Amino acid sequence: MFPTRAYDCPLMARVLSGIQPSGDLHLGNYLGAIRNWVEDQGDNDAFYCVVDLHALTLDIDPAELRARTYDTALDLLAAGLDPDRCTLFVQSHVVQHSQMAWLLECTATMGELQRMTQFKEKTAGQESIRVGLFIYPVLQTADIVLYDADRVPVGDDQRQHVELARDVAIRFNRRFGDVLVVPTATIPTTGARVMDLQHPERKMSKSVSSPLGTILILDDPAEITRKVKKAVTDTDGEVRYDPEHKPGLSNLLELLAVATGRKPAEVAAGYTRYGDLKTDTAEALVELLRPLQARRAELAADPGAVPALLARGAAKAREVAAATYDRAAEAVGLLGPA
Ligand code: TYM
Figure 1: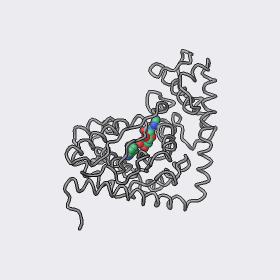
Figure 2: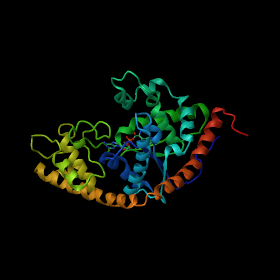
Figure 3: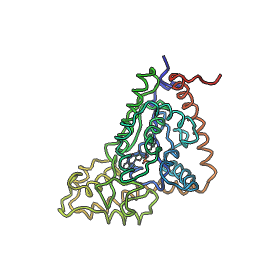
Figure 4: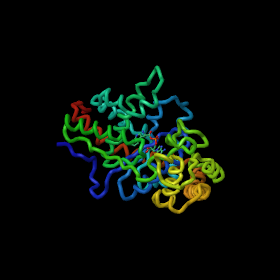
């Protein structure tokens, strides 16, 4: 029987998550994922990666991809990831991601990938669809299982991808023995789906959101305040948490709730006027992001530090990933080098 872990760390759960280097990070990334990554480090054996291979599924200028990968790592450090308490690395620095993806692609089916909502959304109306975009979720599965991850902290939009990872891992184990750890998504109760401030029926996102509807984590206080003040609400005038009928207002309540550690309905009880809610939400977000922005400025002043930290992270990640890959390669029957 194969071991289910590359190395034993019995008191800690293994956690893995990833983020695309697709430009400036926004409040959705921060509240839905990164904030929880920071919470999870230390108490868990946490691995976080900047998934540059995933970014190749879309058209991106090579120089820009390199710059964004670096900037994303910088943003994560600024947000509070501590390389002494977690393993932070760049996906392409660990070759086993692509190798493992191939083993898994040979077990995944066209049908299950065709059902992925993000794939359908990203390819709607396109005539020529890249294979990379289609198999993207299997590379994501490889990211997860390589680290024997028990938990995957993500926003709500990644729920389906983690479900797929579970299905693929279970099927692989059924066919080849107890090789892969089957992961579970951890999705926060508040902030899991931050909506666009101008189009509150759709999620805040790097690719489709409007500039005024998206708060970037590096927006200055005046910009944050302007965006919150201009947020679309409704005309019935009642402050009530009701995402279905009052999506814009409920989004603001959720933002203020998550920034102040409360529940949205509790926050709603304290307001009668939309204007007051907006003022307080803007202030809370400015305060929430202030320390991150200050750290970001400090880190940017020492550009040599980040590549060294990423090299250290990759070395540690490689050890774990290589052991899992070797286990999986042996299980499927690859001969392996002498
Ligand atoms: P990505 O880069 O789109 O987003 C990174 C994280 O941010 C969360 N997120 C949101 N949360 C709340 N509200 C929003 N509006 C919002 N927008 C984004 C996402 O849920 C995610 O947790 N496929 C993944 C990257 C990935 C990955 C992995 C994740 C690759 N390999 C392995 C987990 C494990 C993605 O494109 O995330």
